[in-house]
Each structure stands twice: as structure tokens, then as C-alpha cells.
Amino acid sequence: MAEPVSQLVASMPRARMLALMTLFLGPAVAIYTLFSIYPLIATMTLSTYTSDPSGVFTFVGLANFVTLLGDAVWSRPFWNAAYNNLIFFCVHMLVQNPIGIALAGLLSLPGLKLKGFYRTVIFLPTMLSVVIVGFSWNLILSPLWGVAEGALKSVGLGAWFAPWMGLPHTALLTLALISVWQFVGIPMMLIYAALLNIPDELTDAARVDGLGQLRIFFHIKLPLVLPTIGMVSILTFVGNFNAFDLIYSVRARSPGRISLPTFSARSSIARFSASSCRSAIRRWARRWRR
Image (cartoon, rainbow, N blue to C red):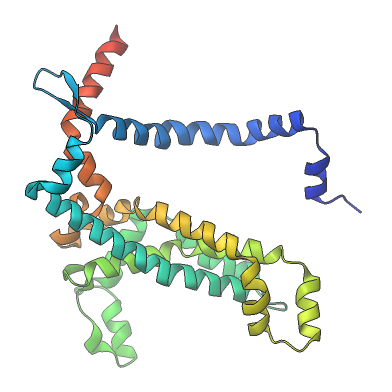
């Protein structure tokens, strides 16, 4: 019988294991550091400086943040952006992740047929570009030629239809639900992979004791995958502040309240220090040419 992967890793020499980790994880870590971690650190560093018209930098500490949070011109769009991000995050936490847990539990049921088909169909939207998703949902929800109104009328709910992406009180929720539809496959697959690692002996013993599938899931499987659910929650929180790509893809039909410049709190900080960033880029470009 083949030796389990965990035993192979445990018996592997440390130097060889580090070499394999460097080989397989090194390129990803380097790319992520170059294009994500370093720009974030550089942005936070630049936010503690200011520049005059000549391009000379002066360290001001937290004065920029005091202005951003206290000045009426800057604080209003910033807190509006933070409020929109909070709503967006709550929708994902309360809708996307529970649906992902439920779908993972259904896919882990023994005897379920066409599991591969269901996994592919549910995960397929995650692999689509946000441009395609935004354009497709614009067509679906369009009050002129969309199919949403006809679909609701066919089930007797035609009075519920409205231009949801064009109303200030429904646009943000509509975009959040579109994002949930696209990315629900990520928590589903992560939790489903954790459920597959639960030993069959535990579920078999519970089944012998007379527990049904629902009680087995809530009393045995769910507590064992709580660490994975915590990781999914962290990924949801991080991904929530990178969701402006979907808003950008449908911004032509979105109200100004959630337009791209005011949706992300990070974009408010970026706009606040835009002049400093441009000056830094010019300075680095001159140094590079030398």
C-alpha cells in the first residue's frame, strides 16, 4: 500500500523539504510580493510624506490621516466608502459563506450522483472574467431587453421587478449578490476539500448510532472544518477590498453613490496621496534613467 502523503512529508529531510517548498512556492511568493505586498507597503510609507510643487518630500507622520479623517472635504467620501465596504462584506459573510458551506455539505453526501458536474457548474462562474460577469448581468437585469422581468412574470412575481442596478437603495446590494453568485465556488471548494479529509470511521460510527445526515453534518463534520471556515472568512475579508473590479465593469449602469471612486476606502486613501505617488514615480524614473 502506498505510504500516505503526510508520512512521506514527515519522513522527508528538512533540507529537501525546504528545497521543494522553494521550488513550488517561491515563484508565487515572489510575484505576490512584487505586485501586492510591496505596493501596499510603499503606499503606506508614502502616506506619511507630503510634497511641495518642486517635488521635495517632507515627513509629516500621521498628519495626512488626520486630514483624511477629520477634514470635511475628505472625510465624507472616505466614510461613505467604508460604509459601502462594510455592507458589501456583510452580504458576503452572511450569504456567500453559508451557501458555500451548504453546497459543500450536499456535495459530500455519500451516494450523490453527478458530483463532478455539480462542482464544475458551481465553480465555473469563478473562472469567468469580471468584465464578462458584469456585462452578462447588465443584459440579464436590463429593464429594456433583459430576461429578469420575463422570468419573474412567468412565476407571478412581475410586480417585484425594478431597475435594481439603477436605484441608489438597491444597486449596492445587487452588485454584492452578483459577486456572491460569481465567487461562491471558492468557499464551497475549500470547505468541500476539508470535508473529504474527515475519516470515514467517524461518520460510519455516527450512522451506526442512528444519526441522520443532517445531524452528522452539524455535530461531527461542521466542528471539524471550523478552521477552514475561519480561513474562508479571512479570505472573504481580504477579497472584499479588491471588489472594485466588478463595480468598474458595471459602473455605467450604477448610481454615483457607489461609483468606483467612492466605493473602496482604499481608493480614497490612494486619491488623497495621488500627488505624492506621482512625484515619487517621477523621482524613481529619473533615478532609473541615470
